[in-house]
Image (cartoon, rainbow, N blue to C red; front, top):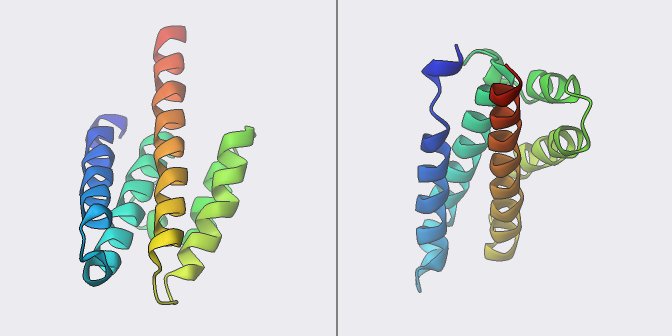
Length: 122
């Protein structure tokens, strides 16, 4: 399963979101930036946890999968992810999206380091 998910796709989604947020007329593009950030989160979560696409559509299942790692970063991100998912019902603001982007980027970096550490141990 791990080989099916390419973490580089999450990086691409982050680049797209950053591009949209940095546009002078970014208000129009905020919903698209949010979608890219959410997709990047889901890719990283699936890459880390090996949950399938069906399970990845449930924030509660994602939260449980992340908590199983029993690491500070995964537990904090599970809490963030649930609140981020709930915030999708509200109109996006540039400041909130920028903060969400920062947190997702940090999580993706952590996921990469976890996978790298695991590969070294094997």
